[in-house]
Amino acid sequence: LGGALTAGPRYGGGFRVHAILPVEARTGEPDRPGTAGGTGLRR
Image (cartoon, rainbow, N blue to C red; front, side, top):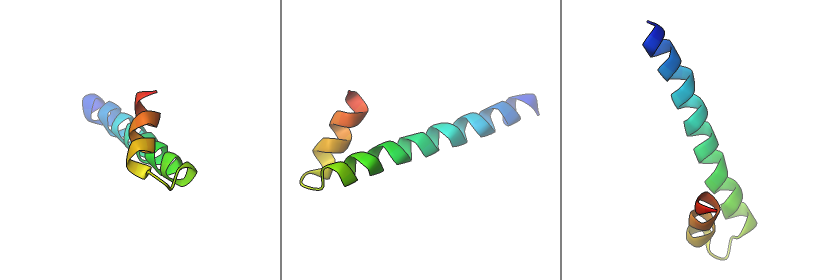
C-alpha cells in the first residue's frame, strides 16, 4: 500500500505540471505551438 500511495500522488502531480507547461507555452506563442512547447520544456 505504501508504494502505491507514494506513486499515486507523485504521478498525478507530475502529469498535471507537464500538461500545464505545454498549455501555457502554446497560449504564449500561438504562431508555433510545437516549437514553443518543445523549447519551454527543454529550457
